[in-house]
Amino acid sequence: MQSRPETRVDVLVIGAGPTGLACGIEAQRAGFKVVVVDKGCVVNSLFHYPAHMTFFTTPELLEIGNIPFTTAHQKPNREEALEYYRKVAEHYHLLISQYQKVEAVSGKDGDFHVATSDRLGRIYDYHTRKVIVSTGYYDLANQLNIPGEELPKVSHYYQEPHPFFDTDVLAIGGKNSAAIAALDLWRHGARVTLVHRGAKLHHHIKYWILPDIENRIKNKEITAFMNTTVESIAADHVMLKTPDGSLRLKNDFVFALVGYHPDYDFLRAMGIELSSEQCRPVCDPQTLESNVPGIYVAGVIVAGSRTNEIFIENGRFHGQNIAAHLKKKMQVG
Image (tube, rainbow, N blue to C red; front, side):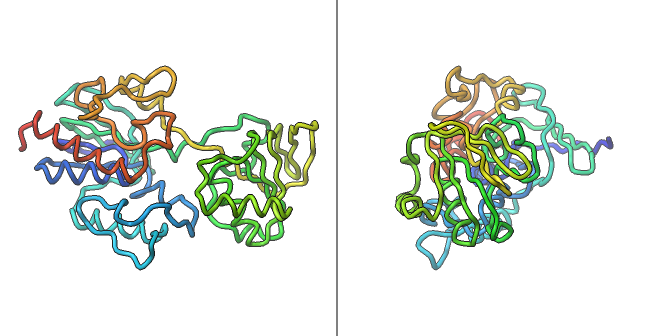
């Protein structure tokens, strides 16, 4: 691997999602030299959302950096959000290193070294005084750990329905992702079966989605199996474990939409302690500095496994908390 010259900054942010961008912007506004690195593109998780997704929230609650989010709609869609965050990054001339995966973080408070690698195997070295970790959770899907999960017909993400017209599709899960995918697939001509291990769909499903999916199931337009798990996946079928016993279903594609989780191993590798039950990083609740001096955590990873507690709407303020603490602890320049 080829090594690149070292880049020196005051603050390095790992993760270019909305919260990571907000952290970078606030640190930069406080007078510090900042770089944001991400193993994917800017707001990579939003890019991988379903193509025609509409946000649950209103645009002002997605705003960062005091830049208005203007839209003609009451609730913005994915495309508008992608454009908004691109424009914000451009407005602040934020230094963002896309498609660079962090390989190692070493050193100590005031003297950290961060090594990254790009898609060509080149190594980049950063020297930074502080590190902010805002890596989100959407890149790591929860696994079913069943035979056949590795087949190419299985996906843990859903983007658009067209390729699945006139096919037999299984959606696994009982929350928003599974419900939205099942409805979208059905409306575009797929034969959809929904499987959920619980007795009923989750109460966290958005209030306008829940009656829709329940009515489709009631009308038998979407077949649903509750208290059911998938035993195995094969090339042309799936095996279900239902309350009435095993059932073989003809199947072409599977969407295993059973949630996502933060990269706990990455956090532990930096020395960040995690709580035993919910894997929450040990940090100061106000400053968000972790148990490792000089390393801060921000965004959804602060909630550990309780990923439904922190969203863009509240995670975007973490940058202000961290920047305020940085100003107290560091001299600019």
